[in-house]
Length: 249
Image 1 (spheres, helix red, strand yellow):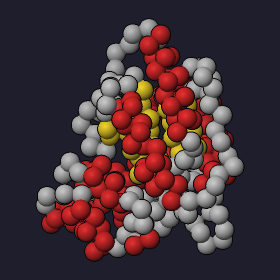
Image 2: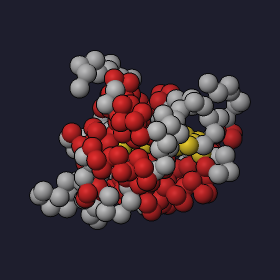
Image 3: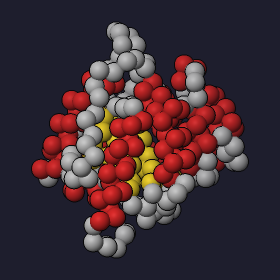
């Protein structure tokens, strides 16, 4: 881990750090000792108001990259709402979100241009987490990140581990065309730097567990019910529509 973690944060980021650091752990803690990353019932439900300004920190909107060439993003770069997800492929709650909630958000909001989803690799479960994070980035360099994402989050996938052979199998399943390039990119300096940059951004926000989200500057911690995300997205879209027009990066 780089020692160059940002340490100076604005007040909005500091508040988000408390929200993500405390609520995130409650929402994603293991159901029992040794069950790290397993899916269990969460008692922490994010309270998301329909008020477009409630719980939103304008400073955090700047975390959205809105880079049209970002291979780990889905949706229009100029979409009015950006959902940033900080997640680990070994996290059971992240898998639950990927299988049960994210496809519905894509169908309802990404496809009509309302929502953009930006992925941030946030590996917190050790060496295999780091390896599969780099592998997902490598798959993205060949335009197959979301296919790799789907394969890695399939039911039972994380139980098979993410060793080198398993990563190669997932890349094949995802349709990554050049296996040799995938292997080289996975172990390359660029992949390590990209994952480290995502990690440092998450830590700067105070995320201590996965998944953690930002929706146009509104922090949401944990794999919350679909309604939590739809309400946040609808409120953000309403706020964006009523805000004065401004140029997108």
